[in-house]
Image 1 (cartoon, rainbow, N blue to C red):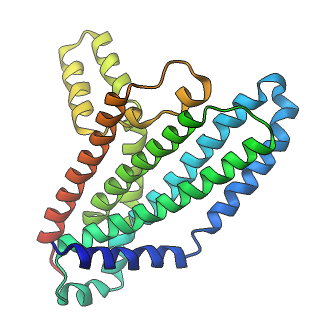
Image 2 (image 1 turned 90 degrees about the vertical axis):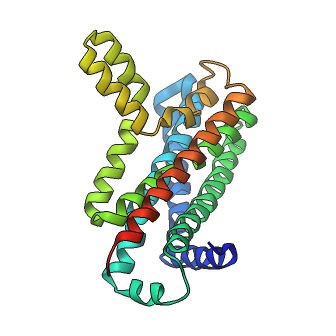
Length: 259
């Protein structure tokens, strides 16, 4: 794989997604926060600060997820449907470079979105004089980015061998299941049924454990201390390794496809 060629292609993917007016989403996020900033104190009273802290991070998560799922699942299929894939693979570009560039380009877009939304979020917190743990908020948004990068890998992998509609549905299902994998294991143990335990353990091993990358509640409510640095590094490494494995699967499948 040629790194320079992959980076150049990833830059083209980034510019293509940006040209689709995706950055309008940043303005949409600011409007939502502005409405919440005015409305939440009217209903929540003394807990309004905590609710706004949680709402800002949760909205950031939802918006990022929508972008990843609806754009990521169509990145490869769009090239196939438009037949531009025939032009690309005729050039000295390997299929692994093609998949890697799609992933890196969309990840760069997500990085820009998360950074911009975090700045807006912190700006509202400053204006409203809401006290917040800056380190915890920073870690929560960083791990949100890692989570969305992992879902990007899921979306691209599913988009390689299924239609955009099916890939969208499956990616959303993986996201939902990935947030409750630990609960599924606990449920399997409570059932005291060996068959159910094996099924839940298999799901835990196959599906990504997204709860490792969710620090929102810890950052906002302080229900428990943030994980220690070793655990944070291990969880970040887990997300990167899982994404790498998914992209490897996507490349293997894409290599076998005929156009």
